[in-house]
Structure formats: structure tokens, C-alpha cells
Image (cartoon, rainbow, N blue to C red):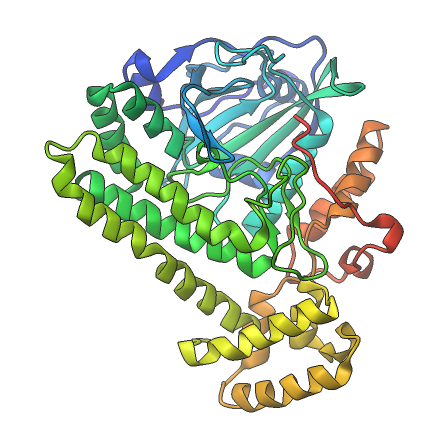
Length: 473
């Protein structure tokens, strides 16, 4: 395939918006790109042509711009740990363009680590191999787990080093998203008082993500509903995003920006991994509250374009205030399934909460406890087995009313997740040129309900525990 080049069915709607929304520029070429991984099934959905490995490496590292692409860096603002930054933007990413996939859906293709942009804020615009592979594995795992997420199409080495705390191999991730519109995209134009731009952005977002929405408040309602489902998905997996800033809150309802993210091992609601989250603002148990806070910021921005913003405040407030109940309902549905209840009702909440309290007190592993409920005796997950037996008696009585609780549980509870110690092990090996742990982890995490790799299911030993995760970009 040496003569075959990458082609894609580009249709770049965002680039057809006014220039106020972005800066057009090409990725910065790299010296010696080489392909680390390519997601062939996703490439087929996107309609990307077969091509040589050399050409894929060139295109997905930014060394070569494919025909039909209109590269640009997007502009946005954002609240970062509660503090508003009036201008952020793609400081190390380039949107190559959009394609309409074979499934009829529109997707962004973005290069992360593709060089500096006008929004880089003195950064080098590059990424190193570790965060690229982390996002590749975790985002594809999240997709396999049934939670809305951006996806990974390719990972490439640049052939150039980047300097962080030490010298590290440079890399680029090709990220695929329903779009890269964020709460922060709306915030910047509301903050600047650029009302016509805000209206145009809102109309664009409705067309792309909520075609049945009635105006700005209809969009707000749709985004809140999508975010509620997303957060419930995270909570049901023990996932901690780690940096839920408004610029990392996607209008599409997808998980975006896998920086200091992590999955819990032992269950505790106040778990924090992110090294930059000193106050626990984005702790596991705070994620529903923060999602509502982020949607309040979106509401504030959307209201600026209304002819009578004051008159619309009450309705916007009602939409945002309804969100905790939406999250709770979605959480109950997912958590009910994890204990074998196909359609949980509020009466089942105490049973679920009692198990979680028991898991917290007994330092039980989140993923393995639910897996064991479906496939074996979960008593072994607990130090005090008598306490589990007391809960189990009530639980067994409840699921005796269900037609097929084991199948329900097995479909809701993964056997394997990308555990922190395995991700770090994979990165350390890859930096030395060994991609075997990466390939093994990918194989297991993209078949999370069917894998039988018991070693990857194992929680970390004391020596393997990863106490903190880092952005590391």
C-alpha cells in the first residue's frame, strides 16, 4: 500500500462559521513521524481510506494535511477550578475538519499535540507519549463500557523529544468527537458581549446536537439531559474525571479531555486522584454537583442572547434545578442493573446505598465487587463477611423477583477497567519502546465484559498503588 494516501469525506461546517470562532492554521510539521496505533474499525466508520502506514503517520502527526481538511484552532474560555479564565482555546490542538461517517453521524477529527497556536499561552503545543496512550486506552475503554466519549483514531510518535520534568518522546493523538463545542465556547462570547456570535453559535449547536430544541433554552434542556446521563455513567463505573472545568464540559454530552482521570480501586466516595485538585472539588462524589454547576454557567451564557434575559431566568433556573433529579434517576437505573434489578425504583435506593456503605467501610474493590455479585460469591471482597451476608440476604430476596438478574448484572458490570497501575505500567514500557502492555490492555479494555484476563482484573498491591494522577501534557 506504499502508494495509497489517507483520504476522508470532509465536510467542514465549523470552518464555514465566521472567523471570530477560530484561527486557521496548519499543524506544525514533525521530523520523523511513526505510527504507534491505528483504530481500524473506527476508521472504517469515519470513511477514511485504506492507506500506507507511512502516510497514516504523516497525516495523523500533522506532518501532512489531507485533501479537504481545513485546519483550525478553536477559541473558548472556561472556569478552571471555579475561577474564570476569559480566554483559553486550543493551545496544542488543531481541528483537521469534520466527516460524516458511514453511520450518518458527523464527527470532528482533531490532532492533540500538533504544535503551538495563538492560544498556547507560552506552551510548546506538544504532547508526550504517556498522556497520548492514556487517552487512547481510557477513551476506547469508556466507549466499550457504553458511556458517551470522544474516541481515539490514531497515536503517532513525532520523532522529536519534548521537555517536561525530563526529556520525553513526543506524540500526537487523533481524537474523534461528535464536536468540540464546550460550555466554555459559549462563555467566551457571552463574556465579551458578542451577542451575534453567541446567537450564531447557539443556532449551530442546535442544528448539530439538538435539532428538536426550541431556541437557547431548548438547547440548555438537551445539554442538561445529556450531561445527567453522562455523569451517571461515570458514577456507575467508579470513574473520576479529575478536571471538570467548563472548558472540559462538552455540549454533546461526551466525556472529553482525559487528563488526570482515574478509575477507583477501593470504593470511597471522596476519592481524588488529580494532583492539581487540592480541595477535592472534582472528587468522585462531587461530580454530580459540579455537572449542575457547569450547566448553570452554560445557562448564564445562553441567557445573554435573549431579547428579555430577565424573563427567561426563571425557566433556565428550573431546567438547571431539575438536573440533580435527572442524575439521580439515571444513577438509579445504572446502579440497579449492577445488582441485578432491570428497572430499579426509588424503593431500591436504600439497598444500593447499603452496599456502597459496606464497600466503603470494608475497603472493597468497586469493579470486582460488582463483577463478583454477577459471577461468583462476592463475600470474598469483604473483610467482614458476616456484614456482607446480612446485606446479601435482603438482596437475594429482592432479585428473586427478577426474571434474569445475572444477565442484567453481567451486562452492567465490567470485568476489567484500565486500572491506574496498569496504565502507568503501559506508559513506562512504551517509553522504552515496548508496546506489548499497551496492546494487551487495549485488548482487554475494549472487551470489558467478556475478558478473562485475571491479572488485569487484579487490584494493585500496596507497592503498585498510584496515589495521584497528573495532566502530564
